[in-house]
Image 1 (cartoon, rainbow, N blue to C red):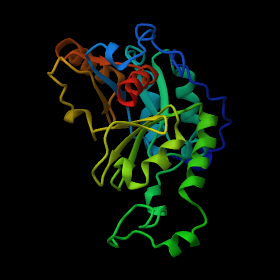
Image 2: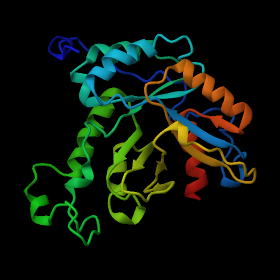
Image 3: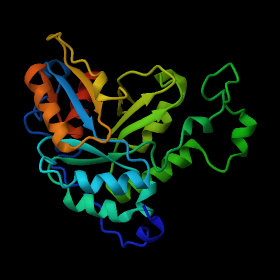
Length: 276
């Protein structure tokens, strides 16, 4: 895409159009106040991304936002806020076309595609081997930090009306005791979904923020056949249309006790279940 021209497009006010938000969830679940009262289903959210490059955003998102099944089911669409200055025309279009079942969430990895864990020292990450990670002296020489990156992401998420991370890709182990997820998840206080390339990680509520460990793709999803406990999953679809997503969701809900939720209702139930 010719970003030198497209970047000159005047921007609109970016406002979520999804019908639910923090404190305003699907009324079917609004009276549930305890873990024990959650109906047993395989709950999931659907993340329609990546779109971490201007060419992807400009080529595919306007097409998919003309799909007749765009709002048939709740779908989470990624916004790479660093690209809002590069291809604002595309973001203007999708925000203006969004409906009640369209939810905009953070794209990998916040303001930009940065592996912020590499801004921490081996001591911060509780690493004993070298492994390419920085020493404390090297960290001290950086012009930024994980905290400043989170602050930058928060500023742009406010502009994009976003408070949920759709898909954070980490190269580091994301176990709660490894010194990173508690820092990076603060960029989206309403929910933080991640895939740890370095292994580890689990569903958890960390400092009040629901943190969802996602699989890399919907193809890996295996709904639980155990009808005694609910499950919570994130399904990622790359370069798939709303029609494709709707057909997939219909099949899953019909055959596998799956409930696809909007992200706010999903994280409300998630927090009850894992935060208890």
